[in-house]
Image (tube, rainbow, N blue to C red; front, side, top):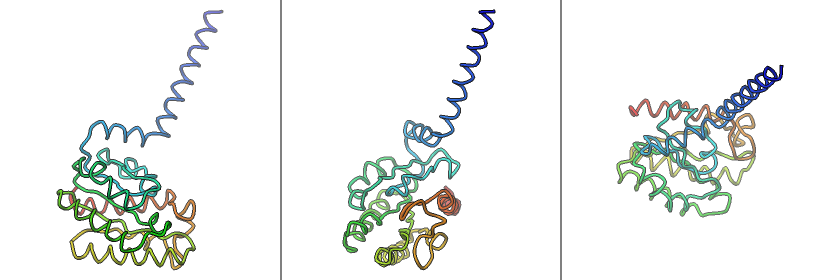
Length: 213
C-alpha cells in the first residue's frame, strides 16, 4: 500500500512538472526561440526599433526562426544610430525592419536631428548590403502636438524612401484615424496590442514575399 501511494505521488508530481514545463515553454516560446536565433547567429531578418518593436513576438508572428528582435525599449534614434553596427550590421542580415522616432518626439528632439539620424542609419545599412525597410512612425492616442511631429517625420521618411528605392510600411492607414492611434489597437497611449501586431506582421510578410526573402 505504501509503495502504491508513493508511485501515485511520483506520477502526480511528474505530471505537474511536465505540465509546468509545457506552460512555461508556451508562455515564453518567443523568448526561447530568440535565444536559439542568437546562438545560431546570422539572422536573415533583424527587427530594430524602440519598445514598440521590442514587444513584438516576431518569431511567432512571422512564423519563421531566422528573425532576431533587437528592439531597444525607451531609446531614441540617437541610440539606434550608436548601436546600429553591433545590433544590426555585424549580424549580416539580408533585411532590417527599422522603426522609431516617437521617443525622440516625446522628449523634444528637433525634427532635423531625428531625420538626420534616420538618413545616416539607412545609408549605413545600404552601404553594408543590408536591405532597409522602414515602418513609418505610428501616431499616439489623442495628442495633436505629437501627431503633427509624426506627420513631419513620416513625410521626410516617405520622401527619402521614394528617392532611394526603399520600401516602407504605413501602419497608420490600418490602425489610426484623424485623432491618432485607435483605442482598439492600443494598450496605452503609445503601445500596440495583439491585433495591431498581427496587422504589422502581415505587412512584413507581404514585403518579404515581394523581395523573395
